[in-house]
Image 1 (tube, rainbow, N blue to C red):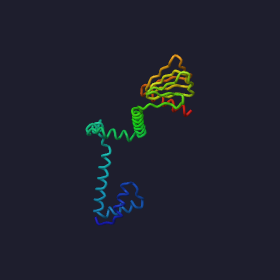
Image 2 (image 1 turned 30 degrees about the vertical axis):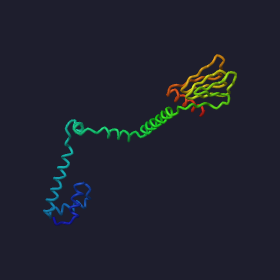
Image 3 (image 1 turned 45 degrees about the vertical axis):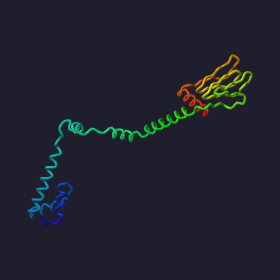
Image 4 (image 1 turned 90 degrees about the vertical axis):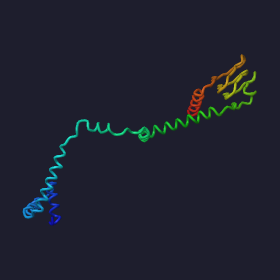
Length: 199
């Protein structure tokens, strides 16, 4: 086809229904005179009709489900990776809990040395802390990884972690007495202590 490109563009405008009236007259006149352009225009119209007829073809029933069923199964690592990407806050919270739990467990297991609150009138004999008879200890008494023997008086709370307390007949405690032997009891005590310091 040796005609100017403008006639081909007019053909496309006509088929797209975007042609102006004056341009349509010009195209019709040219198509009557040029057999090459006329046959090209007829081919374009046939192609357009074919494309438009295929838009009414419908896929078979359950087509999508059948195609999805034939796809290879996804690897579990890909599934988990997608879940991690979709829930970053849960992943961060889980990692935080795992790290904190590991830290707490290591602290719980590594600290086996006797530790005692600092009051001048407490006596330490081996792994046993003694409140001597006739002595008054003011404030809370904490004993960790040891035993506490109260023969005198404690004006405050008594907390024994990983140990036993013995209260002699003459011994007296004005506050609460708490023995913590289990890991979760120790953890609960630390949480309560943390929040009591905040408020």
